Length: 207
Image 1 (cartoon, helix red, strand yellow):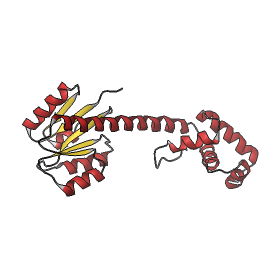
Image 2 (cartoon, rainbow, N blue to C red):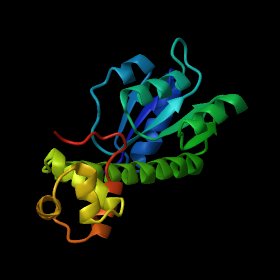
Image 3 (cartoon, rainbow, N blue to C red):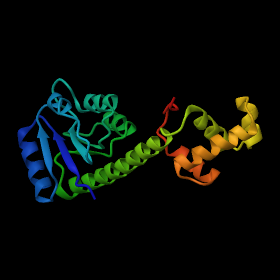
Image 4 (tube, rainbow, N blue to C red):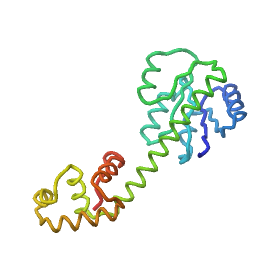
């Protein structure tokens, strides 16, 4: 299993050092940032990671960082830290996908439990992304017409109905269908439907 890296963003150096020490003692590789802009300016990390993020920071707060990550397609799970309970902020953070919202001072077991849950989510997300990439690569082997045939077959249409939809002959549809199945390395309509469901959303067909 790939090692979980933890990014910690907090403008309080004492908090950073304390959290870094706890996480390193428990075997986590850690990177710490006193500035949210420094964290957001870091080169994108492609491994399994999560973010321990302070809510209240001068200039750019934790919720701003969360929105910036979403906008940039950075999908690392987030655990928020706050010096006080803040119901509206908590609700907003969780609605946007945060794993947890911890109130300082956080005890070690509570922190480690949240990090473990964030790590589990990060690992699951990585597996999903890898599956989507592999599936996208398989569909990229198809011509546009082969993809059109696949989409119609997956909707439950028979070869004759697919031919009518595309304005072509049934034999031509059979050829396209056979080629598509070989390229996708599948042998049934059920397998085709399962494969289509693994595609990331809003992925256009290949030309």
